[in-house]
Image 1 (cartoon, rainbow, N blue to C red):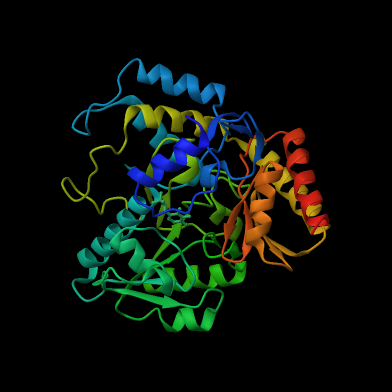
Image 2 (cartoon, helix red, strand yellow):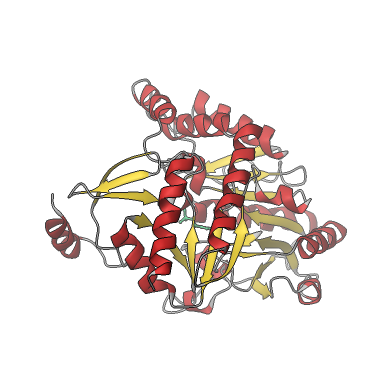
Length: 390
Ligand SMILES: *Cc1c(COP(=O)(O)O)cnc(C)c1O
């Protein structure tokens, strides 16, 4: 299929809920991908932080296809090994106690919301069900996770939204603590607001919120859907804030390209769900979990040190480029504020052979964590040349 056919048939047969770039991608390896004409691109997007090991990583393909040829699905009524191994690795790497598998970030966030409310209901009864989320957050597209998302643009058309979400200003300790009232069961935050424009929270703010949560038995939920699985240079980003959450959601990078979401439960919450409280037909699927096991086994301390090194290198190079006002973020999750409108620049970069993302007014970079020095330098020189020519 060529691009014109793809565009025309997409318009005919698909709902127009995405504004796509005018490119038909056909195959990739590592951080290199090509379109139907054979034109090559360097990938600074990883899907959207999904392809942690890049396109078509050999080890990941072997893990997935081996499982695919063995047992593809059983339902959660039976034990299967890949899901148990993935859960064990997630617990060992995070200090969390237990795992529930679903299929996406939004679904993981549905899980943390339900778990927080049930924890509070069991201990304190009705009337303590509010979740305090942050202004400018993003938690997903389902009804509850849209309701938890602190951006007005997402709160149109679909009324009625789910009740029981309140919002505090990110990095405003006084505002947040004041809103941790007796009817609140949990605080939910992203350590770096991704869709909100790559906005990192302050360490002191996160620690103050975590301390207040502990004192009031309000659960601390960290949404690691974008920041997790090595993206920020530690396995989970919360490690860099010196906190241990009660509930964690993760997804994007965990499957390496296959759909997966996970809820991680801490000591307070590990016994909250009993049989029948929560479930998912596809959750914990053996093929997807076999891929996740490979990702989790690959991301060790040496791998994370490389992510930190590459993140610092990217940041340093970009900060020195023309039209760059600031670079924010952690590890290999970076947001570039230009002194010009980012949108046309993103299209120029595409034409020049570099895939990047946007987040609010910024250019957002989420390169594959395994990107080589050569691919990094190729992508950076396209960025530099494009900015120089503006
Ligand atoms: C992408 C994202 C989600 C939603 O994940 P889906 O897999 O699209 O449902 C939730 N929270 C954060 C922080 C995200 O970046």
